[in-house]
Image 1 (tube, rainbow, N blue to C red):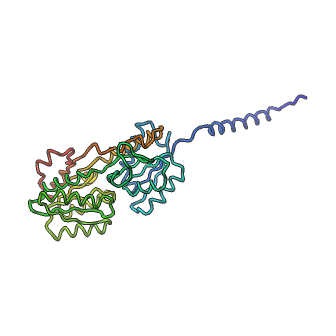
Image 2: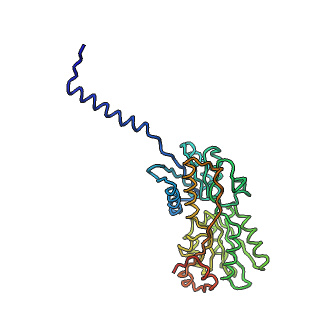
Image 3: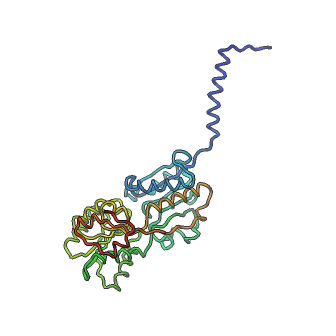
Length: 331
């Protein structure tokens, strides 16, 4: 029996097939990998570092929105939120989990998964704190970049002494919530003893406590101040810089961002470089490399940044020895 199909019916049939074919084609396309980005601070604070992270990803061939997706979770300096945020990312089925902005984020990521690869920025000694057993061949599902260097505490003390009159105390502002709190205090005490340098330890874990610490500085003769390398202090960069300016006291900060914001001096590792390396490691894992095959990277570059404009405004004479050693001078 011959069946005759009219022109209208034929066009309708072809149109229906055309609608199904694109859907089938799309269904066959592989889903792009998903990166979970967990951070204990805020998007505003970490904007330049996220940019560096994306740049590192790009160097390995991954562009956000094109062949990789990224979901962000921000703790906003409330560490107790991190475990749930980490679990959310794990439940989203991320391919790689990036943990940053303090070791609390790394711990939360480790507690949330033992199978999904974790790439972390590590602020403490990763072996001493038990994050990994070995720097060269970390076991388990974690690798990353360490921004921790004990010797930096002694180096910052050396810089502070060049601004402080001989025999006058130097203050050290620390956050008792920092995992390196006791280590850093021990290191500055050990560095100060052979020099006969008096150290005054100040504690602050909130903005109000920072204000109280700076008020305490005004009550006793302090030649200079060193600010501990700490994610919370990084978050309130401008607040600390303004407080230091009000006291007209030489301050040695830990990150270039403080000097750019108007702080007198900074000495530390480059966070932008660290996050670029984290991006590269994340891309390599997406391509199939196991975390255990990627050694924990140690700081490879240290920056001494001097804000000469701030020194002039505060009436502080910069020692020539500091000026000639500066990697960057802001005028």
